[in-house]
Length: 293
Image 1 (cartoon, rainbow, N blue to C red):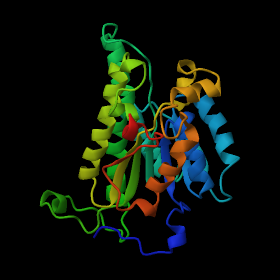
Image 2 (cartoon, one colour):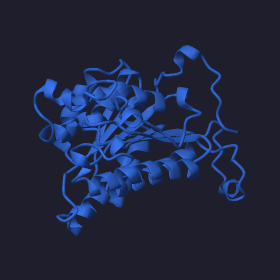
Image 3 (tube, helix red, strand yellow):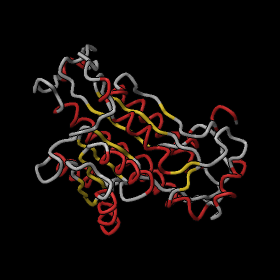
Image 4 (cartoon, one colour):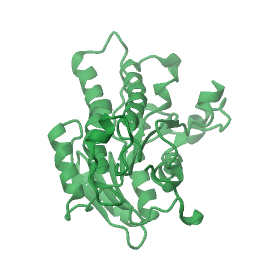
């Protein structure tokens, strides 16, 4: 049967002992989320293509982690299926975390290019990094959780799913994908130059809903859709002066753009027992952009 929380209400957001895998964890949203998870008791495995960045991120995360939390890294290009499989196998091994309860996908790239400039190489790279990689990670980690994270130790029975009846032993887990408010709205500069990026972020939302249906009932799959946010990826695209940056969002109720820490709270909520009834949806830490523009 689906899980219903019946524990201590003061521990609904507690991540102690949970095993979290964070793609894109070497910087930006991914590293901020990893810091939040580790500080709240989770064991964390961060993944990225650059080992030097991963090593530096581990040092920063370890400086903020809870006493018993473990922080590890694994080099992986998530756009390559074989590397995602290798990452999953490492994660669930004794050398890794020994399992997986939480998957976060924060990998992605962004580059302005007008529709008349797009070539196949640019389009394919954007699709591979921003959406195909999420399909691989949700597929291989999500189905591992479904088959292995069972309270009674009984393997998932595929026939129960085929008959349309929820399996009483379907495994539990949490998947959080980082999308963007650009997945549902045209934002900034009249929206120009974002055909490829906006398309991928719209796809991230629907991918999350589809995986939520496939991995039901005890694996929740959700999306976080931030507003324009001051991350390393956006440094070259936003003004260096903080007051000027916030002026871009002066019409919003929050009257500022987003910062990496703004996604940490929603990410902790979606990784915790507090969100057990929340799935196939998107949380927008957008300062009111969706509602007011």
